[in-house]
Length: 103
Image (cartoon, rainbow, N blue to C red; front, side, top):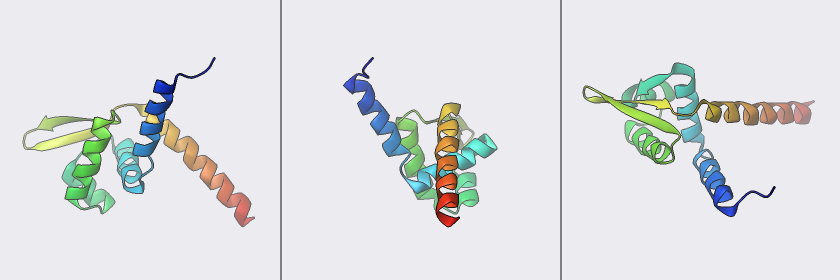
């Protein structure tokens, strides 16, 4: 059964969001910790707060992360655990390829 073009376009948008190393770093950290505020993500990843906010806004617009307000802070978490599973699959493939090339 062919995949509709509209669905392929949406998949391409998701992969485009996940193609940025900084966004992957933020997602990996959120996946490992559960929830974090922007400032905490900045400290843990070494990414400046302004950049963290910008990337999280893009990920939120794409439905990859969710946010909630807690006092003056905005707390983020991964909205769909399948995104973490997808990253695990791709990372495992990259590790295997690197081992093959090194060996």
